Amino acid sequence: MTKRDSVFFLSLFLFFFHGANTIIISYMPVYFQHSGMSESKIGSILAIGPLAAILAQPFWGYLSDKFGTIKKVLLVTLVGVAVVSVFLLTNSHYVFILISAAIFYVFMSPTGALGDSLAVKTAASVNKNFGSIRTWGSIGFAVSTLIVGQFFSFFGISTILIPFMFMIVIAFLTAMRVSDVKTHNKPVTVFDAMRIGKNSKFLLFLGTILFLTIPHRANDSFIGLYLTELGGNESQIGLAWFVAVSSEAVIFATSHYWFKRFNEIVFIMIAGVIYAVRWFGLAYIGGPVAVILLQVFHGVTFGVFYVAAFQYVTKLVPEHLQATGHLLFISVFFGLSGILGSLFGGLIFERSSGATLYAVMGCLTLVGCVALLFYRLVEKRKTKTDESYA
Image 1: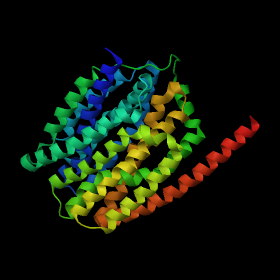
Image 2: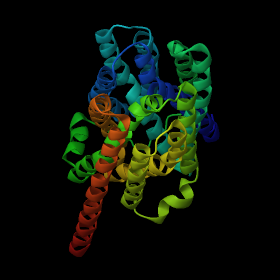
Image 3: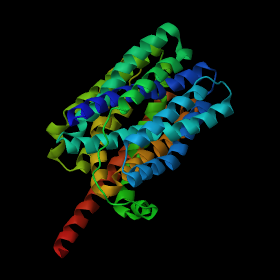
Image 4: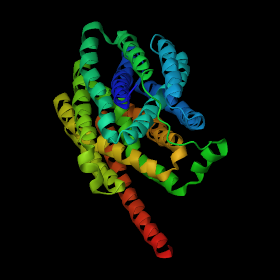
């Protein structure tokens, strides 16, 4: 298989996997609400998965680095996702759903990160930009929101397993055709992976971006419920996600034009400021139509943030431990942030309103922007100090 063929199948995998991820992010909370669960119970279900993911993701990343294969680990996680989703999306018992969600996210959460890690390495091997490959995941997410939203409007949200399983099976078949990319021959041990935990710069960066990622993950969990609170329906939820991820796809696809102009931290701060504007807009501009229109900011928030942060993490960790570093980053973004965003978001939403939740998210993001500014100043000062001793 040529490298060009591998890029094609990798793009297809990203398209269908993120299409399936649409259903989990956008519609699973609505599915549980339709089943009669309260917002706080939904929040606890959404939080238990990321808790399991925090423990599981570094493990999958370590296995990938140790055995020098992303593809085989990816195929294992996809099989796990397919099997466990049957139990998660066909049961009505709360405790059983909690257990199923934990196991489900052990497999689901690292799959996207492994795909992105493979995209980074594949892009480098064929002299392409990471964003130009990753954009197919965003396109798949966007297309899925429209199609699945219409599907649920016609057949009902109770049929959630059907489109999800369809996309996961195709994602598995396309992943089988993707080529592994080896970038190192250095053996990796548990002690090598543990050294990442002693990288103070890496840990400080992960701690700082929590102020941005917690509100982002809260939005992922509750935007559908917020639209419902404002009088929206499943079709409008799909349209809102379509607008959001379409703008994200544009940012990923054009990243090679704008990405090299500034330091990655500068781009993350810019994304943070726009994040704050977006959350305050959602808090104080009511109505489903306004929410849908404000979703266009998703591209210049998440799209810019993710490209810049993923590339920055790639620089912070050794080459032979990049898969481990990438999954640790994803553990914070989609794991720890998912737990805090889901739990506290659910409590605020239930005891007050969706508008209050988004106002709190805006304030937290502003704190993150200030923290990133200090991080950037410390980084620049340390760089100058290192240069003066060189």
